[in-house]
Length: 357
Image (cartoon, rainbow, N blue to C red; front, side, top):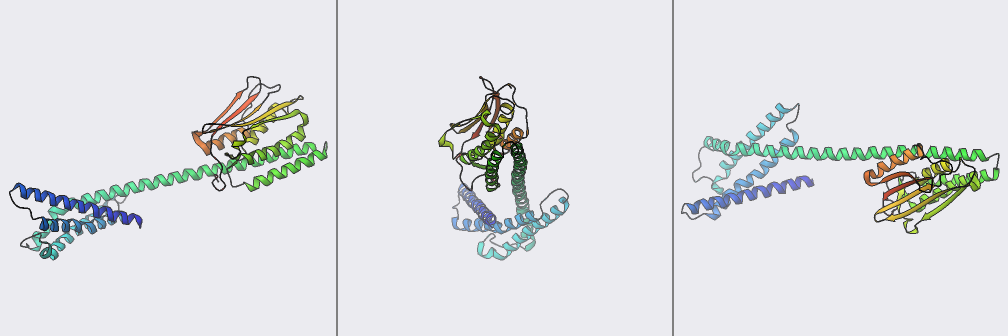
C-alpha cells in the first residue's frame, strides 16, 4: 500500500512538472512571436493534458506489473501492452471529445476521426516510453527482491552451520569430560564425585544458553572454571592455571564455548602427556575496538604446534561464520617454549536478548 502511494505521488509530481514546463515553453514561443501569452488558458490546457496522463500512467504500470516482458511470455506480454497502449490512445481521444468545451484544447472541435488520428501521433511514443519505464522499475524491484532473498538465504545457511557446529562441539566436550570421570571412578571415587558436580554445572549452563551463539565473557569463564575443576582433579598438581583477565572486559560478548576447546587442547598436548607440572595461561585484554584472548601453555616436552582436531577446527569454523574477516585466529610458538593461541575479535558489550541466536 505504501509503495502504491509513493508511486501515485511520483507520477502526479512528474506530470505536474511536465505540464508546467510546457506552459513555460508555449509562453516563451508566444513572446518570441510578439504575442502576449495567455497564461491562464495555457496553464488550464497543459495541466489538464498532463494530469490526464496520471491515471493512464498508473494503468500502464499495472499492466506491466501483471504481464511483464520476460522469457517465455514475450509475445503474450507485447500483445497485452499493445492493447493497453491502444486503450490509452482511445481514452485520450474520448477525453478530448468530452471535455474540450471546458478545457479548450481546440477552438473548433474536429471530428472524432481527426481527434483519434492526432491522439495516435501524440500519444503512441509517450505510452511506449511509460511501458519501458515501468519495465525498468519492475526489473529493479525484482533484482532487489532477489538480493534480499539471497542475503536471507545466506543468513539462514550461516545460522544452520553455526547450530551444526555447536551440536558437534557439545557431544565432543561431554565425551571427553565423561572419559575423564571414568578414569577416576575406581582410583579416586571422591574426586570422581566432585567431577560429576562440575559436569552437572557445565551441562546446566549449556542448556540455559543452548539458543545463544554468544554470551558474556564472565559466563564463558564460569564454564571454563568448571571444566578446569574436572581436569585439576584428574591431573592433580601437574596442572597449573594462570589467569590474566581484565575485569573491565567481563561484559564483553564472546562465542559460547570458545575458550574451553582451546584450554582442552593445551592440556591434552602440553600437560597430560608429562609427569612434571605444566602451566596453562588464559588472558583477556582490549586493544582499541578489538578483544584479545590468549590461551597458552609452557610446552613441556613438546615443541610442535598442535594439529587440527575437533576443538580447533570447530572454533575456526564458528569464528568464520560469526565474524567473517573481522577476526583473527593465530597459533604460534612462545619464545620461552610452548604454544600460544591468540584470538582477535570485534569488541562489543554483551546485552541479554541481543546475542546471536
